[in-house]
Amino acid sequence: MFAAAITLVLLTVVYFAVNTLVNLAPLNNVTAATRREKTIEVAVNAPIMTVPAVLVVIAAALHTSLPAYAAAGLELLIVLSGLALWWLPYLAGVTVPWATAGTGETWAQLHARTYAKTIIVLPRIGNRPRPNLEHMILHALMLAAAIVTLGYAGSL
Image 1 (cartoon, rainbow, N blue to C red):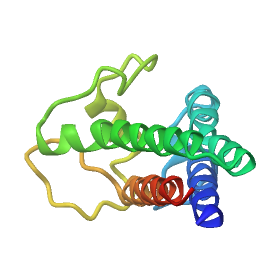
Image 2: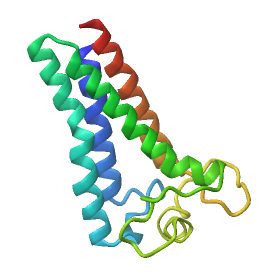
Image 3: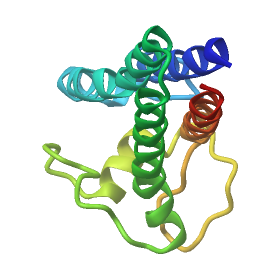
Image 4: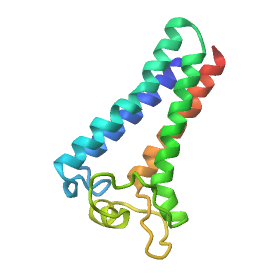
């Protein structure tokens, strides 16, 4: 269970970093994001997303579940933040305050510029921004990492 937890957490971080920095159009559209936007996104989020892996390693080294539970909790918080960022605007028409931090744009403007031309499989709900496939995969990976890490914590 340790290997699965650490693999999923790190796979999520790598997936996030690659999709933020590497042009994989039409899965993503990194060419529409500024260099500053990409740098800030990776510099802020990748270290936070890596902390659960560190906590899982600490839990394994100390043979104690508390750090693993903390890792699962943090991973769950990360996925809930991502779901709030993407799914609240789509399902409820509500944008979270941190959605466009530092960009000077609304979520709808940022979405139209950077995500609207990527692969989107969800039906339209009015003019609301829709989660794209890239982020649906990321959210699934984060949720799987949280669940497996929680399972690992319970096995210690």
